[in-house]
Length: 306
Length: 261
Image (cartoon, rainbow over the protein chains, first blue to last red):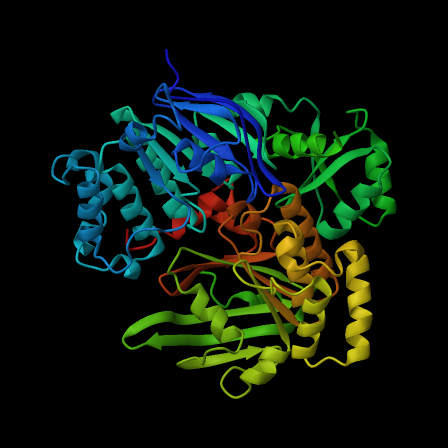
């Protein structure tokens, strides 16, 4: 099977800043492929190269078998792009925006309505409203409708859920799941680790480098150390004490507990004795399974040490 | 549900001094024309507490935060922040709080030191004290090498840590953090939360909004707002138990469903 996207050793710098550093990956048909990483990791730069809006300094990206530079005209017909910043016309109505995008791509709303009906039906009651007056969740649905109106083969979504509340985020992912049925390949970036689990495969990206690419469950399995969850009432005292414990390898805050790894992966009574001496009463220690964020932290630390 | 039930458990637990009501909100209503943005809110936040203020987009959180920070007046109800009345003493409230948001916090074309000096001046601190704090702050953050660098040259993570330190430069009673960790990497996010814990342990109340539901688990107590009302208020573990949920995210999805789209 020919991959939908194939990136080979892509580099991109802006002045002295190296935004992308040897990026290679492939995306298969009808996959939801996620790029997970913080601001400044290079996600947007990469997406702009995939969508033919930027030229790499070195290396090559092939989309649908075509080079992203020489094939740009053909590719633009086949790619739907939703940038991170809301970039529809705020002074046009919902309906006008959608019609405008359809016209630019030489199609009509009617022709491809079945593809967007699921999403657009939520905002259709407000079709006369100016796009600039919509709520965050509605803007997001309109932007997605506009990115889909020319029936692209590939949908590129740059941080579609940033700043969106948990309920709307969940709804958004359900919409993406449904789009897969139309054989649309989806590339999506997010800073939310929990959204990684909703992708078929993910790439963890940091400072222009890919730290890992795999199925989310496989990435979790990459964490091979024993992980302990430690809880106590005074969390600040707990984390400060655990940092001082001589056997500690890493100690990170995770919500209501601290995730701890130990140098020898072995736990004994010395930990609770140590904590008691530090004045922490009744700590609860239990072994726990690692999540994708534990693995990301581990990879980031390794990357920082190299 | 959990509205205004806090009076039942007045006690001191950990760093939190529950006799010290840093925020007191009683029957708060805020209307814009016929639209009720805040519909009879009741809650208290204590000294040294980390309080998570959650809600869907458009639930009315920003309206409440603007009132609590002295930028907007309530339509009716009683609001005291750091002991000052939101109707009569908004200027005193502003002097006794700190504020940081993700979108804007520091002047990008000023250096680290200039930003600290500027904010110290705005807060009305004495020059000698500001200078002392500049020194302490740079040392605590391990920031000495950045002293004369302009903000736009700093990585996002460092900027956010500095912005937080500047927001508590004048040792306010309470600091408001509006989506403070958006877009930062997981290590920086955790370092940021350690700073929050350290600040709360000094007795400063931290009032935080976030869309990261896993971050809500870091808070001592959280409230969830929906359509202008507080629909839940308790510790994360109590809310999970009550809603038979594994995570705060599940709790949120169960009870914060917005009416529109």
